[in-house]
View 1 (cartoon, helix red, strand yellow):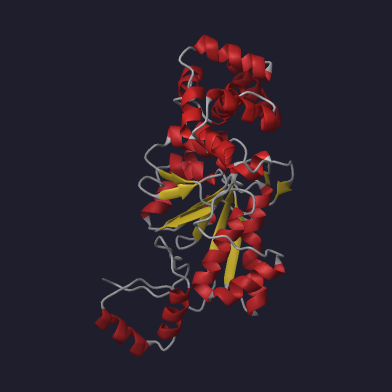
View 2 (cartoon, one colour):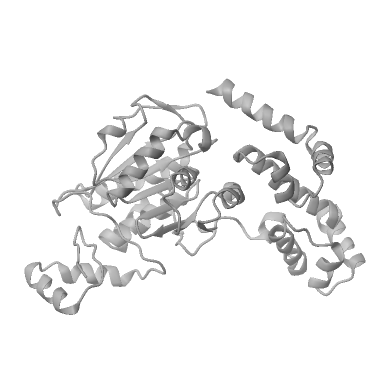
Length: 375
């Protein structure tokens, strides 16, 4: 097995080869020590971004139309602060768009870029920054370009809904990945071949994905830790007033008790069952049996803490999932109905209208018009 060294990264190899390499480079031992401090559940490596081991890692941020500004900032700022804390240029970066024109993010702010897809070096780490409606922002040219880069063995990542772009290009097939929790079910429906998790971030071989919000910060801190050691990563976190660095084992959402504002173990367990059985809803009687309660006791529990019946709460969960699928995928309305436990399209439409004051068909049409107006 060959060993590749680039700013302290290596893979396990034959011990005799390691001995020979240590004789050639004294810093090999330091690299081993740093990596041993940070054990990883899954293989995590940082690509070589230059043939010169003393040159900085280069990261390219590809901005998609209506990308999420917070997620982008959470990914790029740690690089600047790492250079500052280290007192030298460890990282360099550039920001590009498909055609080299400024890109408007989801809050309306326009961000200038420094180049096009053709300006990206072959050995750069690429991070695709997504946001609102990544499907429309992902063009055939971008997909073709990403596939070509992947054939070079390039490390490619997706931030927020940038994971959808990677999935559409086929770059996440057979990989573990994550995406913002709001888009999780939509990605599963459209790309079932991906091992999708609800982790804050995932680095699996030469693919990396991070959920939106501050999750990219945790991912970049993990990369800095692996490259330069935990001390530098902690210094960066301190500069960002970030006191709890998350790992790839941390999940995105708050616990159910924290979300509903109620700490009742049986209530939380029932809601967990509901959330995991959207496509095949469980009857109130079966839900009650799961927590050793009667149906009447379960009814009183929901009325007391959530001011609604279990049946109503369950229906709201299913309709929220249905709305997310309508807005974030190209699934037909009938397919959305089936994916959220409605066997009859007419019943689905009736329930949807009662909750959202519009039909699923009009919802999808209104969403399309809204996107056209803001484009």
